[in-house]
Amino acid sequence: MRYISTRGTAPALSFEDAMLTGLASDGGLYVPETIPTMSTDDIAALAGQSYEEIAFRVMKPFIGETFTDAEFKEIIAKSYTGFGHDARAPLVQLGPNHFLLELFHGPTLAFKDFAMQLIGQMFQAALSRSGNRVTIVGATSGDTGSAAIEAFKGLDNVDVFIMYPHGGVSDVQRRQMTTPSESNVHALAVEGDFDDCQAALKDMFADIDFRDTVKLAAVNSINWGRVLAQVVYYFSSAVSLGAPHRDVSFTVPTGNFGDIFAGYIAKKMGLPIKDLVIATNQNDILHRTMLTGAYTKEGVTPSMSPSMDIQVSSNFERALFDAYGRDGGAVSQLMDELKSGEFKISQGAMQILNETFLSGRASEDETSATIKDMQIRTTEVLCPHSAVGVKVAEDHLSEVPMITLATAHPAKFPAAVKAACGIHPDLPPHMAGLFDRDERFTVVPNDLEVLKTLVKERLS
Image (cartoon, rainbow, N blue to C red; front, side, top):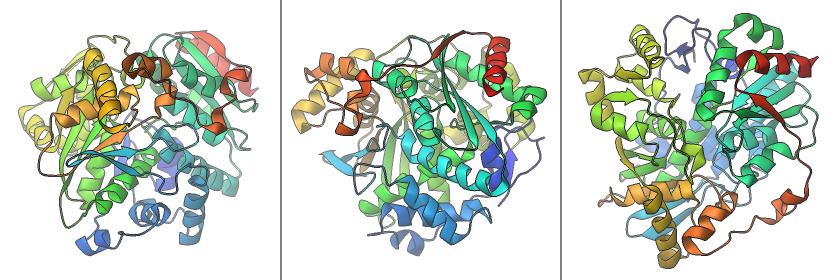
């Protein structure tokens, strides 16, 4: 299995090298040269299997010779031992043909744990074998950072720097990043928004001298390993509702497009997915793009679902790559145009995207109303991001079962949840002391040179 860049000029890499590198040297994102497929019998055989066994069968074709079967099974087992539900990703029925996939039972209470815990174990295994050391720099709108720190804190071969927008994440999200005491983790509060953090991350990778000096690696959703891990729960949930013998649909609250792109990969592998619905909050650039064919940045308006307050959805580049017939030159031109704030998608590519994805948006009032309504109707308390998904999903219900991804625990956003439904969601016992711990973070200006200097100083 080889991995190629969405911009066409970086060398093809093995799974291990693509995972450890993260972003391609030409600025593109790695994708598999070919997508392995599963037969109807292969998918049917997943029924009744543990989440770990499903993960092994779904992911194994993508990793090549990086790990033996025994090694990979051990990595998967270690990755999910800290989850608070035996099913790992349980389904809850919200109504006729509408189900909620609870992805918040991991150690940091967000769907990012499914990928980050696995990435942490794979990094540790690969780096221990080679004796190498890497520096992970990540950008987060809230959940990725805490999941990365939880996965990599205390590891011998890794230093972790997480950039997050100063004042732009919830108190729980911030404290998950700033209270770990391990010396190899560094929380950087950047005076800007998430898009500024993500731009700084990409610029660091573009600086070859800096990249090589600090041995830079990325674990944002630009890392293919992250996307791969998220493919698994599409299979586990669909099979539990009768796939491959009947179709299922998914609605995914998304900002950076990684989670719904994982659903696209699952569909390409053979999972019978009828609809893949993109759910956006008031920062609805992806929804507007699907309606108009123009990807136009209009600035971020802070919302109660901050992990979706994004204007540059990095993983959308992967979808564009396929929509343009895997033409790296065409994708590279679009990304150059985006530097001026907008690009327009060709008619042919737009037709392919519209055949693949549906979309919708939820306003702040609609998000609050959905939290309240779901609590009354089902007793299920939703986080604001999950509520965005549920609202958009209800606009797309049909005779085909709809699964909405619940991306975070409501206790990560207690103020918004209480304002909506009057209930203050409590943190689970393993996080009960979060607000009693000392914080450790550095406020940094939105300045690339300052950020790079800080990273080098901390490493020395």
